[in-house]
Length: 179
Image (cartoon, rainbow, N blue to C red; front, side, top):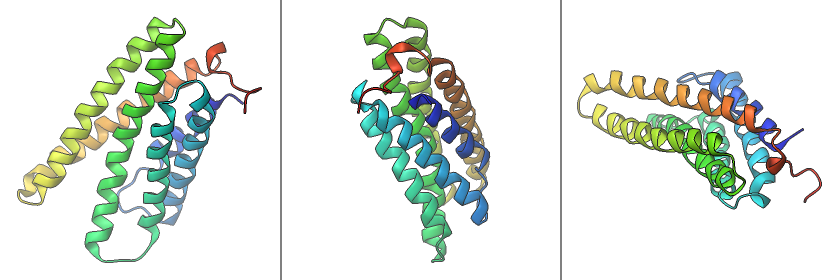
């Protein structure tokens, strides 16, 4: 299986398992998804070094999912939820930036253009998510903005998942013989 196909399966799990204050099954599926993404991107570090930082974000997502399972004070649970949401946008941003550089180096302008859009759109969503989350602590009405930003982040993640699926079989992303 191609490395990006591992990441695609992981993204599908992450997108489907997003449920605020979800149970053990939701959080477990989320952790498995992030580990799948990390494994796919780990294999692609030989293609583009930027996948190393994207892999670190995916591992942070898996760790955050595990933290959400632990009982703890409400502040810890809320913080873990906020980090889990932010990691999706950050993962899309760093993953698409790494894929962008690999596409530019290998003459794939359409993939590069899509990745460029996704990278900056994810940065914008991340800024909105963090601002709305922090602002909702002071003004309760900003909770709706935070929820909308989460949905936008999931939409970008779905778009990025499709882009990775379409790009997975490209010769410059096949690393089966390399370790």
